[in-house]
Image (cartoon, rainbow, N blue to C red; front, side):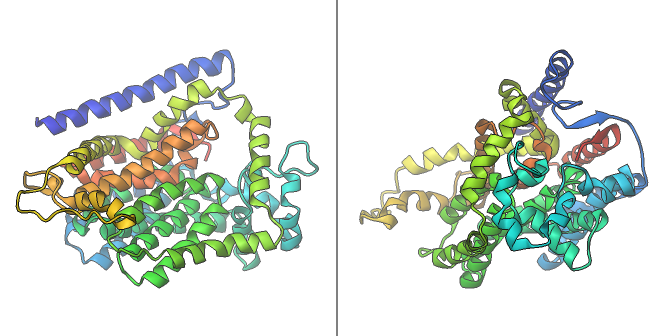
Length: 481
């Protein structure tokens, strides 16, 4: 076994032990104090081994992706690969959801008392509802919103209101929408990785983005839909900064970033990923005016309609601590949330993150390395160009002297993108506003962590581990989302 593979094994064993600790410690806390408010910590789930109509399909999809995914991803034309990835991710998500049956897995998920479809009738007059939205966030307010509606800006429930208005009402259509749109997130990540790093890395990541354990929750919550909107915002920004129709893609990115912030307050942390994309872009003049113009559209519309985002967020924090957020212990969830993340991204991603960290370790050496004797002197011009000259130079020249994929600039670019997503997860974790239920809340960030699997060797073995984890989770547990 090579040294890299041995280190990957150490990382995955450590991650597995973290999950075991979260289960054992969490079970003890819940039995003695009942303060975790989850029945199978660190997940909101119940123990319940079962099979369902989606079981055969899930096994077939998993076997096909493990056996043929890496080879097909390497050989298909790029646009065909994007379509195939979306189709395979959709099939994987549908099959996992149907393990719980049509009713529980799809039709009723978004109709429970905490969910968005409970408030469809309260949006008969949309402008009036938006003006009055913040008056119903706190628990003591009259006709207070259900937990998920109060916990999100109004673009989240409004999505399902508009679906209802066009004749796609009810839980079945809502579930279909979330699965179909959510599955496209893997395509967005591939587009961004290709634009910012290179196509070879995107192709290597494709099977892992399809066969992700996160699909267990992508098909059962609106957060899969949120993840796709945020992912496409980043993808369009990546296209804009790399010169692919920068005006159009920059504007599209801005529009989607604005919508992202009005779907979930926590997704404002995608600013960390967006900032990294701007840093990685080779264009000297990023299309910021078009991005900023797009960003202002959605906030302007909601503000003119009478919704105050900042006031709503302030009230949400108060509502959060009025409910289970004020009961769940921070001391447990601050590390158990990370164990939960291991379950949604899988052990392959843990190994990929280990390799991401190893790749990032070369940055200090690059920034302090002496140029060759015959190299031209660096630009000492003051200002933005001179300030970033050292970093940009490091990103553009080979990272390591040895040959191979892991010694190239694209690897460093992908590592920085993945690191930005991981930083956003850590910020969300430390904030204390994500205590439990992160198996769905952090789906938008988890997709970008999966891109680290492009660094792995022996992809079929790692894909098998991903598929087994997802199948075990979905067959052994009755998930709450």
